[in-house]
Image (cartoon, rainbow over all chains, first blue to last red; front, side, top):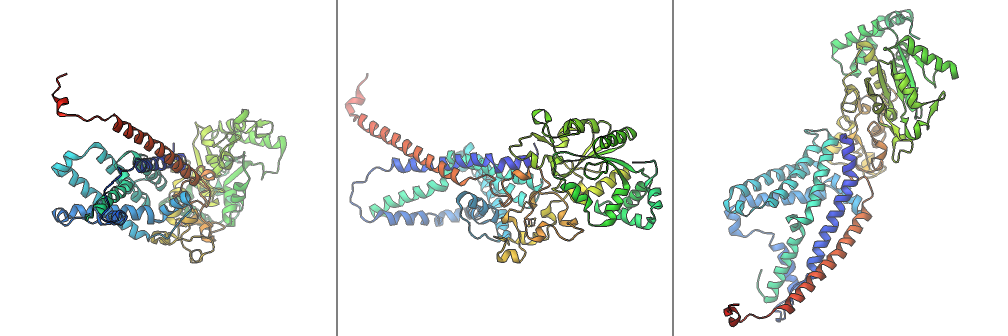
Length: 219
Length: 364
Ligand code: SF4
């Protein structure tokens, strides 16, 4: 099998399989959580739950002051690679073409050098959080195989994408195939692992905020 | 037909000056990015070489490759390449036909045993006993096997011969095969392209003649001299790609400004060929320069890469409806799973009994 065959496979059937697993899996898990629902709260609400829920979704994205001071480097790294992921996935030109193929919608892209810079920063930041995870005794104790697995899958997607764009290590078609396949692995892992936090994070924050809101407590 | 005279003698007889010949050799050497010293060696090699017998076989093809080499813009190139070689068999170009043509092929094979070069354009259909294409009463496959047996080397010209090309496109009804899959015991040089660049054909043949060996090839069997860089590596629109400036349609502002054609499906990043440097029609232009993305015609399966206007990063098949079905299916399964869990919750609640202190004190 040549690199071109691999690329054809990656862009064709493998992508379809990964997309179906991702889309069906993620929807299944979210809908399942929503259908199970929460236990009804019969107490009289002190104030509206919705507003508090929605605002908590955002306020909890800002780190607590004490936590930030304790380990600013790691927290900033966390932000960098999450923002990097968002920008690369949604605002880089080649990826917008993938979105266009799936949804029919497209939007303007960011200039390549900016996306490039964020990619390098994200790769560095991911290394920082990994080193931190392995050096901090508590974190290391809490980490499971899955934590390393999802780290590796995300890191590889970043790294191979960068190498492909810059024609490094392998020829472009080969690296592009490797990159697409690494993203497909990520898509397949997604519904079954902690990667689901991309969506559940907001649901959890909403529930927390809404519960607190009803009780008239700031969250 | 080769008659034992060397090329040097032949050209001298024709009144081609040594100077003109050296110039031509250095042109060919520079095309192939050979070092300056090699250009001299090439000239000497070519001058000493006997006129090379070439048998050109055309199978499932469109004659575009022959058009390309005979329409080579520079007249010296075309003339000279036909001086260098003795084209002993070529359906389209030879004067003889029928049995006389086949006799010419057999005669050339016998006279130049082990020394002649077989050029093939077109793929070979091997499905249904290889009967989809026959010439002179034998199948293409038989003709290939028979002709290649005593050849020095095989040159597969054009994407059909090199990789199967259009006849090989899904669903490949004739089971078309590239030459390399069928010829295992002879060196096969692929000069892909639909059609291939004439200079790439001429340069490769000149290399074989001058040095008596096969030039350095890439993993697809193509001479690195012509297929070493991707179109994208050498594309003059590359700065726009690097900056992220893309034409969104063929007649928008970006297109008029000559921005990168990536979003319009340009396959330059995954295509290896010399179009961006040698260009076409004597260096006039090449597809990207005239405003259309590269089709990737010198690559395997270029016909099946999901459409000429789909960007290389995008999935090659239609995925929108599939994603919608997956989401709908996932939602239905999610509702079902949620309801099952809810039922379990209700059941658990119903089955729940309160434990009292007395219960705990019970010994059995
Ligand atoms: S037009 Fe094609 S080959 Fe040229 S830079 Fe853009 S993508 Fe690359």
